[in-house]
Length: 106
Image (cartoon, rainbow, N blue to C red; front, side, top):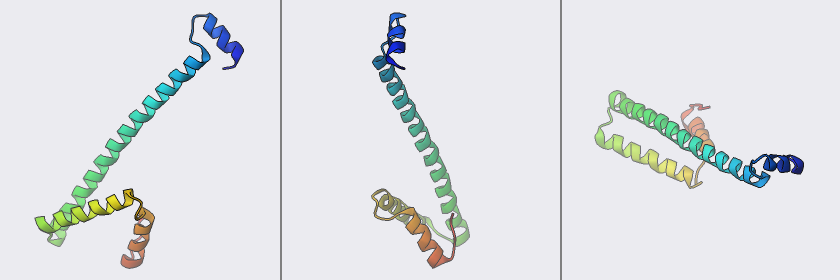
């Protein structure tokens, strides 16, 4: 909105250009926060579902009991803490899996 448009808009009873910009910025921030919350919830749901699937496979197929499964879950949690802290990256983990286990994860 240029100055002439802003003056015309303000004369018609609208907000001035700076007020419009502030309202747009507030709405944009609100929408970003809403999207961020939804994404975190969706991602958290997928992670929880995948974790449950891994744990039941470890139990049913590989004979992990409660203690070993809990230990595994704690190790995975610690690994993700290290990723969040920047101590290791997912790319490094995938590379290690490829090199040591001969499994490629895209």
